[in-house]
Length: 272
Figure 1 (cartoon, rainbow, N blue to C red):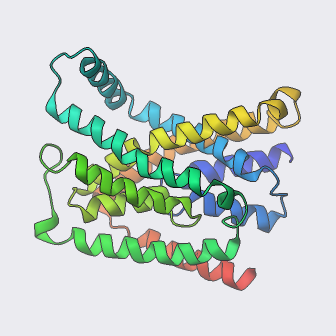
Figure 2: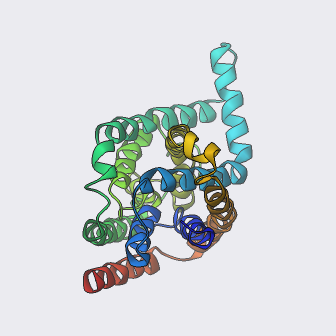
């Protein structure tokens, strides 16, 4: 892999990880289009995701710090804010389904799932999910005030099951969890915020695991330089992408992403 290729992969990862278009799907298609060998591709992509996840940690550092304080208060049996406690439990228990299914399907993810036709089909199905969520969120009965009463542990777990859909390349983690949040009654902003916070344990855990597995390639210099370059661009572009999505969805619907996904799926079917 050349340095330029690593930079391109990093930019694509950062640009697509947090918007509902599937970063993994884009990386698989890009590898196929540029004829990049897919050996070790899942591990390389997971570390790029890990780097992009660090952008979430930076962007939401206040929320994370508050949750860490809440966890400490919980462990030391101190008084804890009920809202912080609910969010903490929702993230912890909401992450469990993706961990379980990720371990079960890990071998498939490295082989069967890295298929451009599967990506195209998942892009179409994911578009349907976004459309349903967008339509449902416009109903007055489904709207909620940001914060307090709408986020519960049970709803967090339901969104966690939606996160499992992201194990299929093309579905999109953010698209699945934002849709899940809207369908269980979260406001648009709360759905986005919870989607990002929920992704942190999974993406960090997956990235650290792959980083450990690739330690020999990294320290031997076979892939270290390219991985550092790709990771830097994934982090920087990811930070811009998060900021863009938050601002964009405050005044716009998910329709532009639905259209983009359908167009990309059509191009994949035509080209490949």
